[in-house]
Image (tube, rainbow, N blue to C red; front, side, top):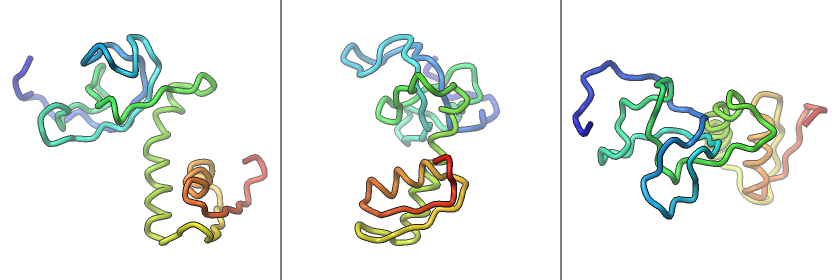
Length: 130
């Protein structure tokens, strides 16, 4: 405890699971909550870079964590952060803003539609099930 790990880097940054410990009493989560997150290295040592999500346990900042919806699996929830970040990056790179329109072809369809909606961008797609 409290010492830098000499172990190899534990891979991966997207995670889902149950809260196993809390940093303080006024946390927005409680022990056992089902959550998902993207693990970001914060540079101040509180979330070390070697705490990958493929470990049995990992450390995640509360602000990077969300409650997992009951209607999705842990596996599905673990895929949400990267897909959503990719959709946001695509919108940023395209320079889309409120009032613009966007055609979405498969892939990160739901994440992209939500990202468009949150920015006031009208989206159209070719996925009949979405």
